[in-house]
Length: 115
Image: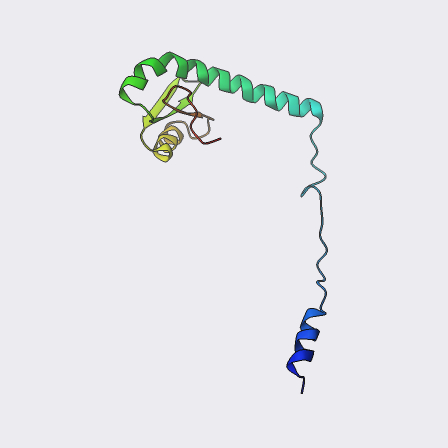
């Protein structure tokens, strides 16, 4: 029979067999600097198209819908308003299921989240 001192010693002597792996999860997927720059430019162009619609509507909506959420789909020019962020997103997805949209908050900055 092992004493409690020996049992603790045996339990502490075990080494983990798991090795730590550092690095990318999928190292075979690497974007070049050009592809990263192209993706950022596409994201910025999409944001600017949505922001045009938001800037046009914001002065009127800020009076009646302050701190509501607004999703904008720039291809059709459609926008959806609701007090709840999830409801506004779902309304946009119901009307345009495969189209990307941008979420704004109707306030002075248009930022919808915390930084």
